[in-house]
Image 1 (tube, rainbow, N blue to C red):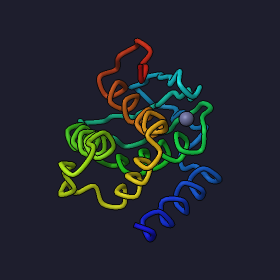
Image 2: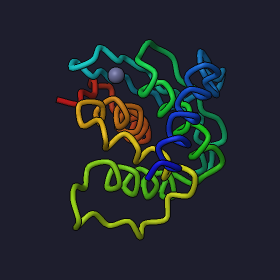
Image 3: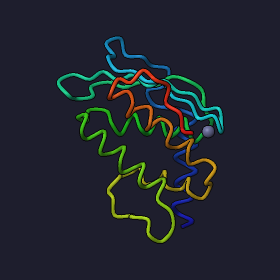
Image 4: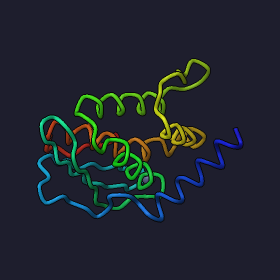
Length: 151
Ligand code: ZN
């Protein structure tokens, strides 16, 4: 597990220091959602440009801890160029990976480089930090204007 842990820390540090698609609201964004993790104070808005059922641009704004910021950054990279259905599938896989516990956890789901996020499971208090941006992205796909909360 040490390799995964090292990789986890490396990726979280990198994406927190240099978050991708951060402070960006694409001028033609047509789907938006806002979410909050009261346990930690993470607070993000996700903007999506969806054209012909495809996510052609994505950005996020807000403030959060290193894990929530890095997870949001990874999320924007993961869904860029995907169809709405593919993005929902990725959300489902990541959510499953982060919330499934113990020996029964299904590790067969293909999440690619996002597997590094599973390192957060060593810090159960931070799992909601890691899932926040994904919930907000899912709400944005449905253009829900309620505030998403991890509670
Ligand atoms: Zn947090």
